[in-house]
Image 1 (cartoon, rainbow, N blue to C red):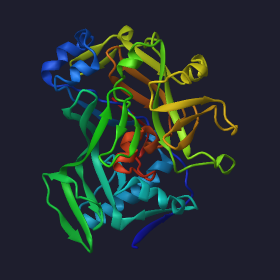
Image 2 (cartoon, rainbow, N blue to C red):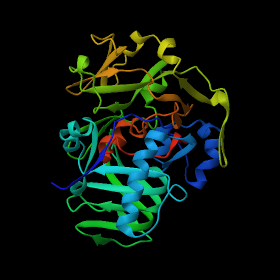
Image 3 (cartoon, rainbow, N blue to C red):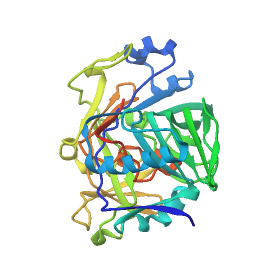
Length: 379
C-alpha cells in the first residue's frame, strides 16, 4: 500500500463551525418571521433545502496550520499551481470508507500521521459548504442528498477512492497514479435515509450514522428539554476507558432558553426570542436524568460512568460512547421552528470534532483535516 507519512506529535486542534443557513428565495420572507409558524417537516415537504458554510477566523493555529501547510504543499506539487494561505483555507482528507479508515486509525496515533493515498481524496479549497437536499419521501422516511461542496481549489484522489468527486470548472488529469484536478467547484454527495420519527440517519446499506442534527423532530419540539447526539470521535480513547468505542458530544437543549443576540444572515433575521440557544453551561444546568428519559431517540443515555473522564455514556447501536460534555463546542442555536442555525467551537478545536456524526461517517472525514486558523463556524 502506498502511503505518505507526516512525522510529528499529534495534537487535537480547535475549530469553530459556523453554519450558513439558506433557503430558496421564495422561503426567505417566511423564515424571517420564524418560518411563518410552520414546522421543519412542513417546510421540507415544500422543497426547502439547507446550505451550511464552514467559516474560519481568529488567530492562526500553530498545530492545525502545520497539517494544513503540508497538505497545501503536496497539492501544489501535484498540480503545478501555487496554493498557499492567501488563496485556500481548508485541507480536508476523505477516506473511501469510514469503517475501513477506523481499521487503520491505530497507525495515526503513534507519533505520526499516515494518509492512505490510494484510498483517500485530499482536497484544498477557498470555501467549504454542507448542502442538504430532500429528494424523495415516504410517510416515515426522507431520502436526502448530503453534499460536501468545495470552491476554488485542488484535489488529489487515489485510484481506489470509491468514485471521483463531481467537478465544475476543471478537468481531471493524472500525476503518477493519482487523479488530480484544479477546480472552481468540487462536490462529493452521499445518499442518506432519515427516519422522521427517531431522526436516525441510515446509509443505503443499512448502517446507522447517528442522529440527524440539522433540524429537530416533532418529538423534540413538544418537550421542555431534549438533547442531540451531535458528534463522535472514535479515534481518541483513553486506555483507562477502553471499554467504550469513542467520545460523544451531546447538545443539551432547554427549549425555553433564548439567545442573547438576534440571528442575522443576509435577508434572514431571527430574533433572540425566536431561538433555542445552548452553550457549555447547559452541561450543568440540564438535569442529566432528563436525558435518560428521551425514549424517542435512536440512542439511550446512562447517567454517570465507570470512567472518570466521562459525565455519562451514550448507547447507540451495539456501541457505548463516553459523554465528554460540550468538548470543543462553545455554543449552538436552533430556530423555534426547529432548524439548526449555527454551531460554534471554542478556540483551538479539532475540525473533525465540529462536524456532525453523519458528516464524519458518510464521507469518512479524517482527523488530519485542518484549517490554518483557530476559529471555525457553521452558519
